[in-house]
Length: 144
Image 1 (cartoon, one colour):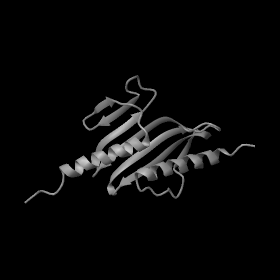
Image 2 (cartoon, rainbow, N blue to C red):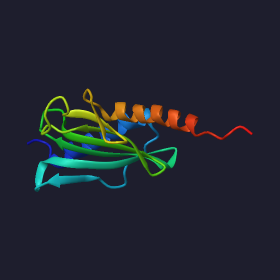
Image 3 (cartoon, rainbow, N blue to C red):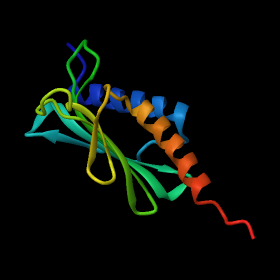
Image 4 (cartoon, one colour):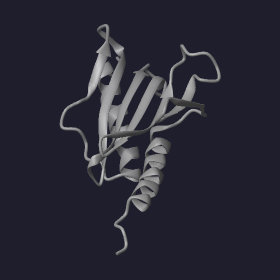
């Protein structure tokens, strides 16, 4: 008898949180942020918000994931939306319904959509840290 589907979701979330801890000081969610699609226990949407330093900079994470016994979880679709001080900074998307080359793309302010390679959550977080460095250096205190 195999493991329950719930076990696979718990394992996927634990692995995701472990990977996040390598990049950011991420505390595990007190409750699961998984929403099953149409009652299908093998396909769901994971939603999370990752804060950077304070609540003024965060990355909203939405991943549609498929879980199959004996296979690694597959991201079917994702959006990583980064905001600082209430302003949209950058968003990484994968939507297989879009035509190539925009299936993987980066959105920037002003309606700019750039083709991109597939982005992992870890790479998205690293890009957010890089963008924060630029934003904080550009908007630092003025010299008197």
